Length: 241
Image (tube, rainbow, N blue to C red; front, side, top):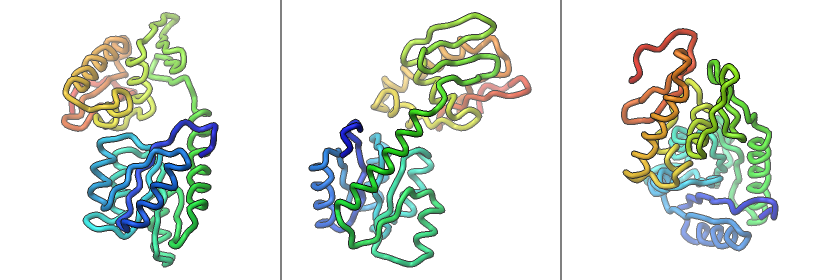
């Protein structure tokens, strides 16, 4: 693994037991942390319960195929890159994979070193992109500096706590879109247990107070799903969907 990277956590879904174990052992020897799942349903369960930097998905798997799993992963987290592994060479399959949003497509048989090179290329691109992302968000009449953790409006500044800043960063990155509750908990609190969920509710309340002076900015509860930071041209009357 590139020595400039932190340890990357990879979800590997492969129903061929021998290939799966060999690939996992090889990637672990290269410094990666790898979770191996033997079918798509186990892969989906693992993705919901853990944070991964990249997913490697076999296309043909029992219970849930790789395409279906990739689609579900995209619904949970649109940013996680993934690679398809397949024995198929049909052009239609390749196009289907990239249409879903695949970052790469590797046809069996392949060399282990090739897989590592492709993983490093994807992680380098993804992490490079993150490093270039803006650190200041416009939230209605507020400016939010994610690095300094400062929320400002009309010359007045509020220094946010780390948890407040992390949560507002996620909400800002998905402004006017749904922020999945499970994703926010896994990203900030690592675990989505009851106590962490209640803690997040408290921080949502705090953020609402920080943003209360602009009636065009609202943090809505989306029942059973998560939250939505709405920035509109009109005042929002309903605070729940």
